[in-house]
Length: 135
Image (cartoon, rainbow, N blue to C red; front, top):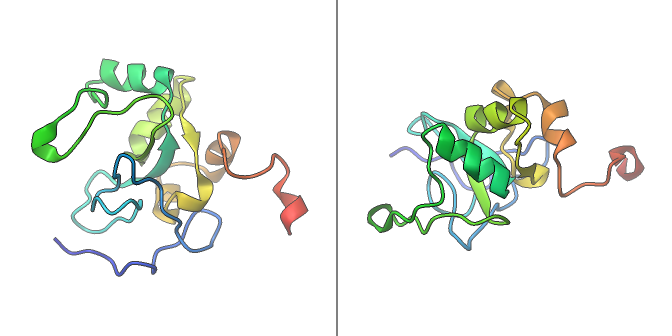
């Protein structure tokens, strides 16, 4: 598995990629970060704070994120958990009105190849509504 060097990937705001979550341990590389690389065909790049609605929609779409899969070290998710989700799955939920919250500082810039920044910002949980106050 070819992994990118930790600390080299950027978030959607242009800064260093922050960790997404360690309880449960998330990320394609299971290092708590939404890092991606050539082996990550699904692009697990959106740091989502999953909701009941998001999890239900994912289950309906055949992507059960709530059932534990101990053989893969996956405990199953509960609302409020942070998880690196596949960018196309997040976009699907967004279009269906069931988008999960997004931690922009922990969402990989590579997700912008699939998801518009405006959509991610609409569901941001880590920045004020008007980020121009920060500039």
